[in-house]
Length: 170
View 1 (spheres, rainbow, N blue to C red):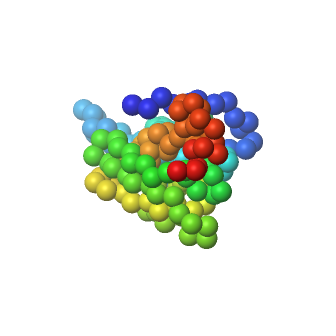
View 2: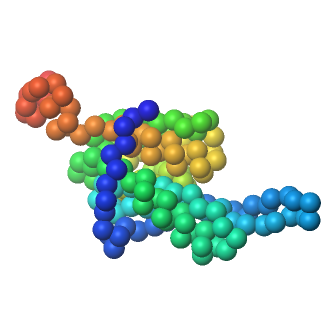
View 3: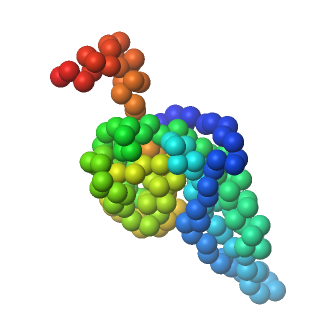
C-alpha cells in the first residue's frame, strides 16, 4: 500500500462532512442495544484530506469521535490548477474508484461518498467513477487510496533526476 503522509493541520482550517450515519444494533441476552456509527471526511480545501469512523450511543458523541479519528488520518494531495496531476485508480475491499483530471470549469463529476472526499481535498475539476462496491466506507477508503497514490510533477522530476521543464518537453 502507498505510504501516507500524515500532517498536523490547524483545527480551525478543517471542515468536516458527514458521509454516513447509521443506527446499528448489538443483540444481547436482554434484547437489542442500539448505538450509532458515523463516517466523516475532514479537509481544508487546500490539499489535505482524511476520513474517520466513530461509534457511540449518542449521535453528537459519535460524530465527534469520527472527526477526531479523521484528524489522525490526514494525507496531502497534490492539486495543480484545481485538478489532479494525472489519472489514478484506487481500491479498498470490493470498492474500486477511477479519478481523472478535468479541464477548468468541469466541476466535480463524482457520486456521493467520492464527491465528499474530493471536495474536502479542494479538487474543483475532476472526473470520477466508482466501480464495484457502493458501500460508503469502501468508496471513501478507495478514494483516499487513489489520492494518496498521486504524485506531483515536482516529485516525479526529482525521482527521475531531471528538471521540471525537461519533464514537460516530451
